Image (cartoon, rainbow, N blue to C red; front, side, top):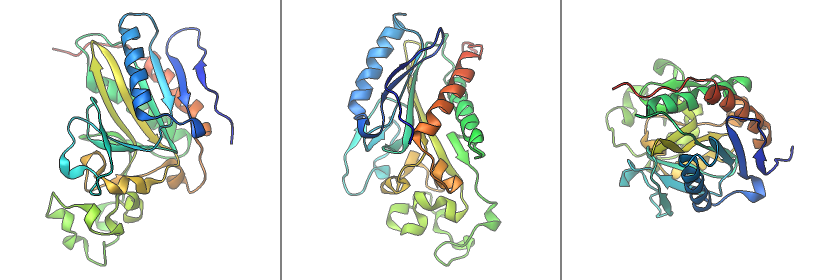
Length: 271
């Protein structure tokens, strides 16, 4: 495995990348959150350029402001409640996390910022031979499943009897591994490769994205990831059927983030 350098990636101007820690140096969530707040304040004061923190986290569940109680782990596993948008997710080894801290024109167009992050990550996936896409109404980067009439039956039942089609509160955590988010690919369903959840304060962005490179995706099975019950999760390694490392993906992510974030004309939200 190629070693990952720590510290700042030098750039003459524009977006600055800072590596906080990977592998054995994976970062506790609270430590990275504190660093985000420090950089956010400095960016607001124009003391630093736009900055993207890149890292792996130690394993943790985090819940955005819209998370419902019935989406959290059933076994009482601790969850860190955070001030970003979105719902509950997991971070941990094998997942590349990025926190772009960027000053945007006001009034801030939050949706446009999310679309830019999605575009960069779609390009990353394409470079590795995975077709990532958007799903209307669901942020992040997805691998689309098979047409519904071509998906395998669940639990030996026909699709007409899939309990999720009639019960929007169906809980996959209580109904066996065939419904687990980590098995969405085997079911031929849509599956999320990269989650996005952000916050904008004083015109400066925080939080960001989590790209599943080669994590243990069964970590998502304790929760209802992003509050979505009829789809699941995926990883680059799982989709490709081969080992993919954070070290391989890191420079590709930097390249496409730089290209998208630096070469887009930033406009305020239309009012």
